[in-house]
Image 1 (cartoon, rainbow, N blue to C red):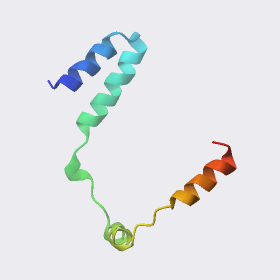
Image 2: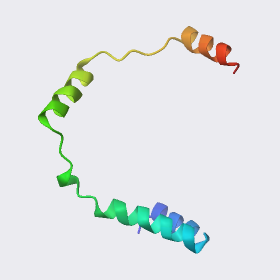
Image 3: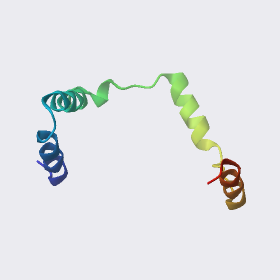
Image 4: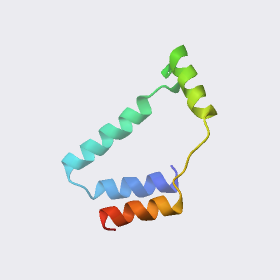
Length: 73
């Protein structure tokens, strides 16, 4: 068991029985996922490729500052 998983299990042990069951359901759900069953359709692959080929546009510092000013941060 990794140190991180061990830490998580220790924290889960301190939870209520109901919370422990919820955490267990999440872990079981993750463990039951089969990455081989996750497939994109041809249309989805085309869309992913299209989006990856587009240039990445980031907001400028001025745009971010303006937004924060508008919302009062």
